[in-house]
Amino acid sequence: MGEETRLSEEFEITGGDFINGGMASCRIKNILKEIGIDAEITRRVAIASYEAEMNVVMYAKKGIMKFILDSHRITIKVEDEGPGIPDIELAMQPGYSTATPEMREMGFGAGMGLPNIQKNADIFNIVSTVGKGTNLEIIINLNNKNA
Image 1 (spheres, rainbow, N blue to C red):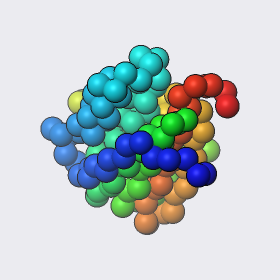
Image 2: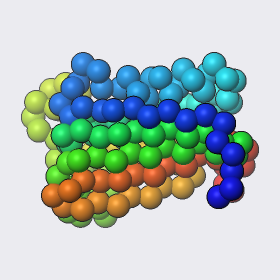
Image 3: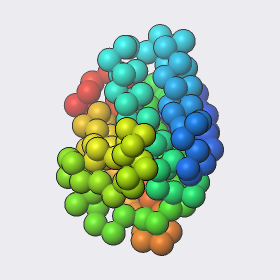
Image 4: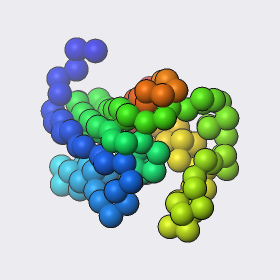
């Protein structure tokens, strides 16, 4: 890499905490607005980080979201302690969801979380181990979206 980190922040996410769910991604969005990052890039980061954060709230015991900004990209890393995803390919299909009826009543569980993250990321990596948890890496380039 060799990129100089301009800014980084780490957020703890608690599983089942729907009251505070979205706070980390909101903070990241506000940081990007404050430092003048392009509105379209800010929007993409906000969507991807919110979806990732809410997946931790909905499915894991807890997680950590790391936000890293360097001169070329924004990286969001999410590591959770959850049940893991047994079939990532299936979980990536729009509309597929394992949300409970209670989650659906709150407006979650449409099955668009992972597809929305991938759609808004320039680079999307997911690794999941059943019984241990899931790690996401989301990279959004600042200058050239397709770089």
